[in-house]
Structures are given as structure tokens and as C-alpha cells.
Length: 89
Image (cartoon, rainbow, N blue to C red; front, top):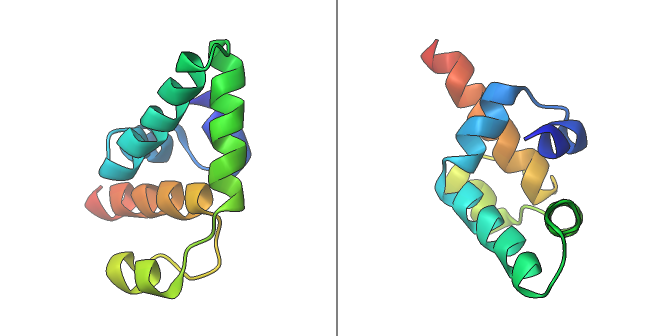
């Protein structure tokens, strides 16, 4: 959680909700793939973070989710979860 929070600048609540979401489960799969390749946990997390920070939200994903186009995946999806948590409070 700390590494994702530092990379995105989002709150622990936003990171927690992201990891509990459909997108967070895909992120966790990415980390698990790194572990399967023989990386240590922190390496696998950092590689997944770097990958998710290079992918950007496209027009289709923006229309489907409301996340602004052009944002890195990780920032966009974690921020979206953070906003949803604030709106629910």
C-alpha cells in the first residue's frame, strides 16, 4: 500500500479500495507474475507500479469509467477509488 500511495499521492483509503477493486486484482496478478518470475516482493511491486504508471487511460476506458483520458492507469484508478470513498463518506 505504501509504495502505491507514494507513486500516486493518494490516501491509504484510496489505495485500499483500489486493491479491493477489479483493477486492483489485476494489479495483484501483475505482482504475482513478478513473483513467479523469481523476483522478491518489493521488486515485483515496483515493476508492477512502473508498468501501471506507463499505461494511460484511453478514450474508451475514460467513457466506461469516468477516469480522465491520458492519466496513468495507476493514478487514474486509485484516484477514482479515493473519490468514490470520499463521496460515500
